[in-house]
Image (cartoon, rainbow, N blue to C red; front, side, top):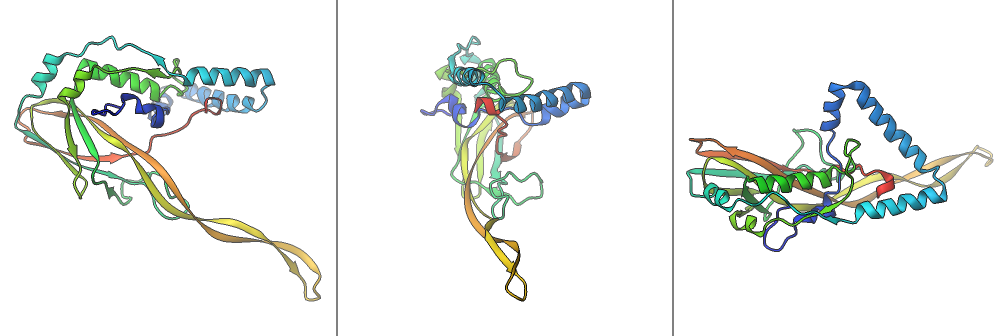
Length: 278
């Protein structure tokens, strides 16, 4: 992640080692149903075979997992164009006004899940750092490498090796910083027309819930005191769950535009890492 001021670009190691959302799968499904079915079938077969692996196969799997999860250094070959960034961040007349929020469920057995429906209640996030960068070729290359890390366990990814890369430090020189207020709002002022990348620091949302769990078995007797069966007892159990949410977006300010309003929803990244790589 492009967090300036001492935060590491590859905080992705902790929270973003994930495959892509289901959207790419749906695209493939629309384009080629047979290909989609083949991928799903292969995933099911691979998962089933993991439990049948021999000791040698399990040892090879563990060695492979260790290799893929050990980051290799990758040099960023696309140079940072400082002149372009400087020009992009000259004073303009457009303001960005955004609100940062999440829809992580609280209460009940689904606490901690990211609500799938738009009408679910939103919780605005205060005191969250938000950064804005001008879009350059260097930033796009960083974004590509990050996406490779995120999507490396996708069934469509050929490169599953975790990568470590360091951006040109000058990229942070041209970043703008804002912090959400008590209402979750953030502001960037006096921007020129062009493309920008907005990134919020990942947040850890703690939610409380409850669920029904088994609580022992009772004996059922007839009128003469003879046991005739059993009955399962249940009780409510409270729990807390921690959910990481993230937000990043590419936006564009058009010529003559006075204000760009953004509703920035922080979402839970998907985590469908195959068992053999966990």
